[in-house]
Image 1 (cartoon, rainbow, N blue to C red):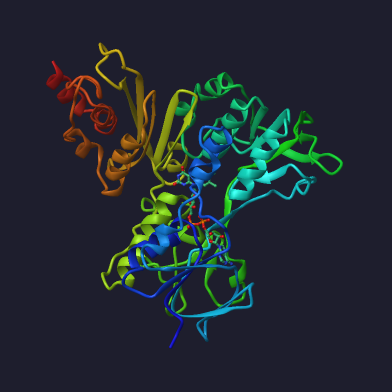
Image 2: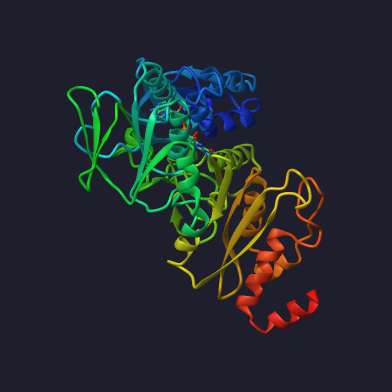
Length: 451
Ligand SMILES: Cc1cc2nc3c(=O)[nH]c(=O)nc-3n(C[C@H](O)[C@H](O)[C@H](O)COP(=O)(O)OP(=O)(O)OC[C@H]3O[C@@H](n4cnc5c(N)ncnc54)[C@H](O)[C@@H]3O)c2cc1C
């Protein structure tokens, strides 16, 4: 008799979601070392002081109310043959089924000075608290490395706390994996308006200081003062305890099939620790997002409960906020899509409400299509209002393989406070432009229809 029907290693969103779905039906335990599971996405806003840091901590009752057990421990090794996990406490736990949800850990580039006090990643509760403590101690200067959503959000938070903050990235535009350069245009200025200084197209070569960080050296020779240096340059699947265990691990994580099974019998993996393919290209792709981890957990829950479901792949819808601009993207950027497909892109710009209404703000959208068959590959949105609903509409269209022609028939709603006039819709307008590029003869038909 094993200790648990399902033993889960991890306490992040993937593990917690799984526990919530199966805890009542199967004897389940989660093992995690942290005092709290975190709402990571909210941590920049705790640094900014908009939220009390305790608000970013999830309640354990999410797990325990489901009937699952929560074990505070760290797994040191697993014996797949004996179906047993050994922990740092000296305890061991046996399983009928093991679920690996160990997540990903931040990458700290191996540059001189990365061990100095004041150099940190931004992933855990401790990282958040360390940054808050540095800010509270009255530091003057910070450098954030990585202009993805996390770096952009954290650098704004630090600047709002009156820390002289510089955001550094090798890319020449901000949010390089989320937005094409045309959709990122103007965002640098918006960041500067938030008092964030930028060094784009720049690479950091060293952190300097005696025992604490004092300055950052860039490859071009520039030196920036920095008592706090935060790396937000990506994460790597946390799979060290499985080295040489026979578990199949690719460059970016544990290999699973579409039902979340690993190559080892009765062993599954979900979330950031997993290597999976894009739902668009079918090729292995990056996808370390909570919004991928949680659907994987739901798919696995159904499979463990006997309802067969498959995970289709990453689409990677994501969003952020820079100053007063909300920006998001999904699927492939034009730059990424162009490496695999002959693409066309189209765009549309309206207002978030009827232009005659007092709350109307600018909203622009870009769509990327495969020229060969008109299939939508991705899209991006910028707006004075939140964009996740629009990003999700585009994701749905990408996910279900819709083409520019299909989008022409999109049936939308309209109301003065919350959309443009009924005569127009962003998706339909961008689709019209795409259809025209895909099939120039259509131009006449579309133009005639509008007269
Ligand atoms: C600042 C920040 C902002 C983010 N914003 C967003 C966002 O806006 N939208 C979005 O979709 N995603 C966002 N993400 C990414 C998102 O948080 C991750 O994709 C998500 O947490 C992955 O969930 P997971 O459960 O797979 O892994 P994790 O959350 O990393 O959890 C892994 C768990 O496994 C535990 N573990 C690891 N090894 C062991 C071991 N040996 N023994 C026991 N336990 C172990 C860890 O301690 C941890 O509890 C953000 C991340 C950060 C850091």
